[in-house]
Length: 523
Image (cartoon, rainbow, N blue to C red; front, top):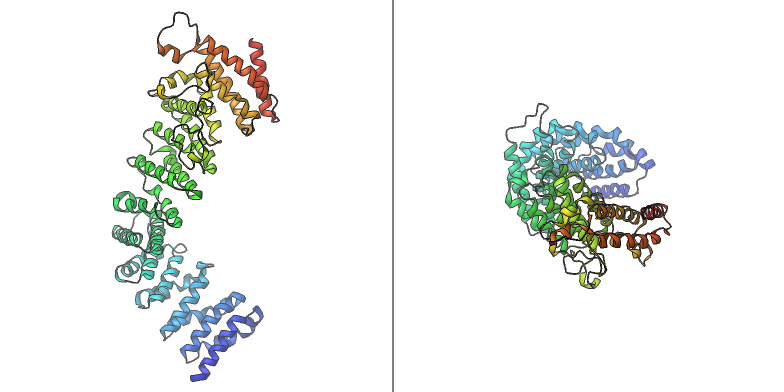
């Protein structure tokens, strides 16, 4: 039908076809549908275009056969038909944008001439998807996209235009390294627009602003560093009630970190860790470690501070998935950075010794989700224990230097009431019977590391042993191992290694047996 009731009946029939079309129906009826694209009534042409989209989904070969006809609809005399053609092409291009590169000139013409916001949104999205396939298109799109950003008041179009601009910025650099002269102005325009999105009270717009910043930072990683107001906004988003906004903001932090502000950023994040829970708490910890360890710790000035951060994180509940990462970082720092080794030994010593009965009991309910700073807190990630044991054992010759660290007198170095000194306390901790045969024994690989490093500590105790006769001064007692303490070490090892020799794990059993026999041979 050309007009009136017949027109709507025809539209109803076309709409019905789009809902029931199959591959066979599409193959048979495609010529008739293409013929209707020449219908004088734009209503029918619109309906046919929208129906063809459903036909192409069922009969993909039909798109190749009718591509030129669809392309011709972009030059239709009626704007609504052009809009439908744009919609169909944009939806189809999601699968493989490269196939639609020949349409770039037609879409560029629409970009610079159309006043239909909804159609422009589709045009901008399609052109943005074509940029990675044809990078030369990026430089041509910068100006018209920037004009849209400056002129439009429609939030949807504004976001699509600024997001497409951030995509273009990733491809504007020429092979010789040169860039268009207007790049700084375009970057500033994108940053200010996205900042307004993030500042908006609408949560959806705030989220889109963060997504846009993420895209902008791929080509302009220093944008957040050079704008303090942007940094403040991103940090504020970390306290947002919406976890998706918090997670998006978290992904931007790595672009904010510098050598000067790293400590401040990490300290702020530690506060967020204490208040967070679930996967977001794990994401916070992963982000903190990623920021500190990036490019082989290039942003860290004080490695003692970073060791303290790792120790703090090792006492956080609910981040068990990050325990191995924390342990590897701890060991890597101790291995790479020689000046920090004594301090790493000291902090490892604290963690191991505090596992003993000498520490007051604390209710798990009282500890809750705390960071482990409260007095009497004994929680430590199980994955961190082998790292602490390895550091103490591998660098046990540095124990005297570690004990001489400023503030060590504030540390309780007694594993329990029977401890004779720091070496004895360490050996008690590393060979505790409950770790091998208690209600909740440690993993066998951890037990193996403990046994091995207990012997390293014993070796250091032997090296630093001395005769107590004539010794004066507190420092000598702190930095040396008395005969009484050395004897206590031997007794504890002989007593506890027997339990580890009964382990079902071959590695633990072998290490315990070898150590026990060695002690027996020494006499």
